[in-house]
Amino acid sequence: MANPVLDKIAVGAEKASYARTPNGYPAMPGYTPQGQAAPQGSVDYAPQGDSGYGYGSTAYQQPQYQPQPYQTGQQPGFDMAYDRTGYGADAVTVDDVIVKTGLLLGLTVISAVVSWYLTLTSPQLGLMLGLGGALVALVLGFIIIFKSSTNPGLISTYMVAEGLMLGAVSLMFETEAPGVVGQALIATGVVFAVTLLLFRSGKVRNSSKVQKFALIGIIGILVLQVLDLILTMTGVIDNPWGLEGMTIAGFPLAGLLAVFVVLVGGASLIGDFDSVQRAAQAGLPKKSAWLLSFGIMLTVIWLYIQLLRYLAIIASSRD
Image 1 (cartoon, one colour):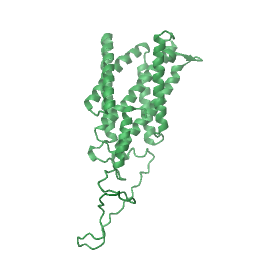
Image 2: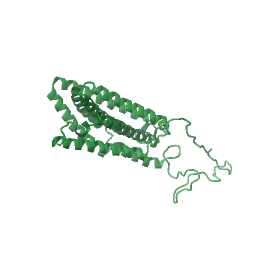
Image 3: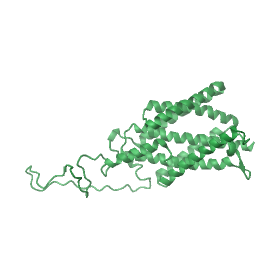
Image 4: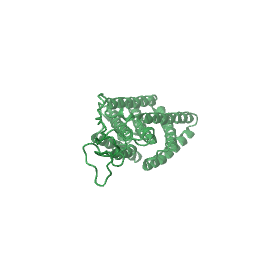
């Protein structure tokens, strides 16, 4: 997948699912699915022909229940994730991830608003907040990703630092192109909502091709922006936006790149939602909701920053 955080969770969910019964509960020692032979050396707990308890020689046989899939048009397993976890109340659910994502989003927005107004009153203070927030977020981000940390305090602190950076950066773009922040926020929200609705309805599904597209797209955009930075710093290109600021037959290249970013962001979100679904079905621990929400927020913030950048380039090309 394109999200390094949710990649690890998806792998963990896949491993956890190996030790489940067909109904999603943990397999007990000696458990053998119907129609399969018990592993050699295992203990068979099935009742034998004569129990020896004086109730006759006929062994009690548990009625065999054949689970039937839900007949709905939604993505298979998305709703079933609520009741198929293997650890009961201690297992993560889709609701847990929704709540945690809302909390992290709220922290990010609040810190961004604070940073925005502090930058208005003192640009120098805003610059310090933006750079400091970016540095703290970078360090904490690496710690969370490489350790797969589910610490709520660590993840919440990352979001506050990210918000401080976003507030200062957003004001900078808004000063150069008034109205661009609102446009980027609306566009990001629309992409998120549409992708979620399509995923839940089953009209779009995650696949290796979708995630390869997302990964290649993210890497391609990163390479292009690094190249632009080098070209502008060395004076090879006079345009402050580099190659991204060019026009093709009078049409800004940034417009095409913005559409591409929407497609890449949507593909990444599909992978994120799929990881949440699989984690809930596999019954991963409840605390993993924090890491799942962190991964979703990474995608949302990346999408917002890219749309903000390209919308600002489009606005500058009209001047």
